Image (cartoon, rainbow, N blue to C red; front, side):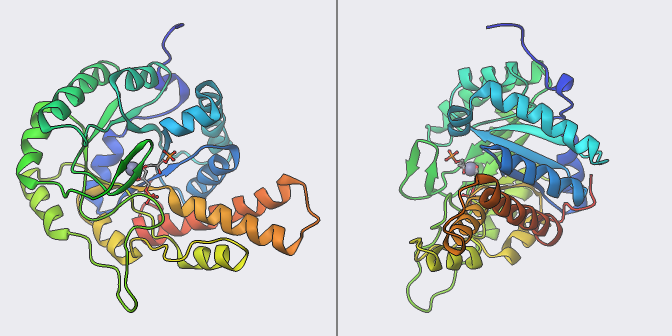
Length: 326
Ligand code: G3H
Ligand code: 13P
Ligand code: ZN
């Protein structure tokens, strides 16, 4: 491959400073996934307008979908767009759920400022060894690294976990110390996707395991903790999708008040992907159902983009508390 590209030349920052401020300030930085132009425009617009630091994250699937070179140029455009909006907001480009040293290295060499190495499905010692290897390469390039302990239920790219395994607080101190990671994703009852809890008639969503979070915080005080699978699965979107021909009965997510509680703790990064997907799908379905003759994608994707902007502003202002913290 050609010469490596440093994120510093792309106008990006790593996550170190913004995580420190978020832990001290009792709020969380939003990490929004993107795969296409409209999602990226919406994230940047909403975060610029709410003056929020932001992590834009790319999964392996997103790289395959959009092409890594295309994604990099989109991110350069996004940084420039934020500046032209008059917003001086920290922007991190993060690899979500990196699953190998090679993928992480490739992303670091192509301009990512932050990397997740997800060895959570591996035996503990192998997770430590793989994470350590990534940290060594990343830190040599001043790139920050997120590791994971404990397994979330649901789908993480190609890996499907049937059941979750909560993070064992006894392990976190040893893991952080041996690997040198900059942040740690933990499993306290969230899961990926739009069907996070199977509820029987009349049942409500069970609370997250804040006791495990507290135990982790005690062992690694002030250390940045990350929450994956943190979409609320906004009921209004699920209802719209079902109203306009979709089929998402039983979709349910993490209530906002629980995310607010997590954001006030050492949880300093909250990952949101599914809510954005739902917003887009709901608005596209609604638009096309109401105007079946429309065939200009700018019309229905424009409506979806507007909804995404509102959703992200709401998350930053009312859930994560990151608005005004740029
Ligand atoms: O954790 C997974 C993220 O929501 C990314 O999903 O792998 O389908 O792009 P993806
Ligand atoms: P959701 O599926 O809850 O949006 O979680 C996204 C995520 O954790 C990305 O890494
Ligand atoms: Zn995730």
